[in-house]
Image (cartoon, rainbow, N blue to C red):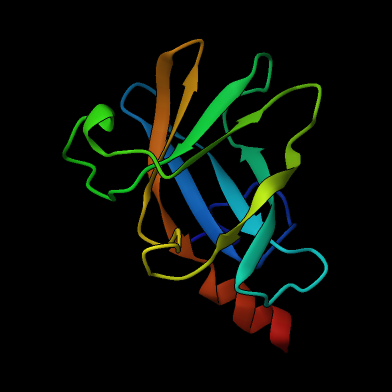
Length: 140
C-alpha cells in the first residue's frame, strides 16, 4: 500500500499505487493511478510518478502493465495489458490515453505486475495495489 511512509510527496493520496523495486537499488519510487476530478472514482485518468532515490526522468521510461501479477516469472512471460511512457518533457504526471479500471477484474489493474524499462533495459517492477489508507483519509 502506498501511504505517507512510501510516498515522497504529499499528493495525490487516492486511487491505486505501484511501489517500484529493483534488485540493485531497492525502492525507486511509486506510480499512483488516480482521477483528479473525482478522487474516489474507480477509473484512473492520470498517472503520477514520484522518485525516492535517484530514478530521475532523464530519459523516457516505458511503463508496462502486465496481464499477470506473478513476480516469480520473467517479465516477458507475464503478457501485456497496456503501456505508456513517462518522460522528462511531460513531467512526472501524465494524462492516460485510456482510462484504467481500479479494481480486480479482467479489465482492472489491481494485482497486475507493472514494469519499467529504459532503452529496452529492465529498471524496476511492482504490483498494483489499492491505495485504501488514502481513500479513507480523503473521505474524512
